[in-house]
Image (cartoon, rainbow, N blue to C red):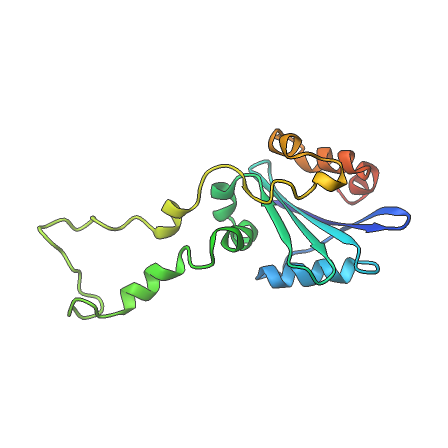
Length: 179
């Protein structure tokens, strides 16, 4: 189960809105969604959380590239919306290369024929993505520093992380209205 919300900073403080991620397939889609919520190209934070397994924050300001932080990259990479963020943070070719290499005829075997050397059929079956995604935080650890939450505080978050972030930003009440 996912929870997602947008926090847009305005002259009057923070405005929160619950958001559906059904149509989000790329970071670009997520960034466009955030920009639509922006007033005068002010700061917009996108909060995404999956049942206390991981949380992510995407910060969008005007036309600048989004800044991203994910609390646990390995856990996020195993979920559909988290994968969007981790691919951006760790490189978009984490799991794409294996499929492309399988399609190439580099060793003279036909597609579908196993290339077994010395009877070891399971030698290279570990997916590239599993090896490439680190466990733990990834991304911009100072994403919220100028808004009142230090890197140390961000890294110390565990349960109700989004609530604690919102509280630090002075937006706890508006976030609770969309929960």
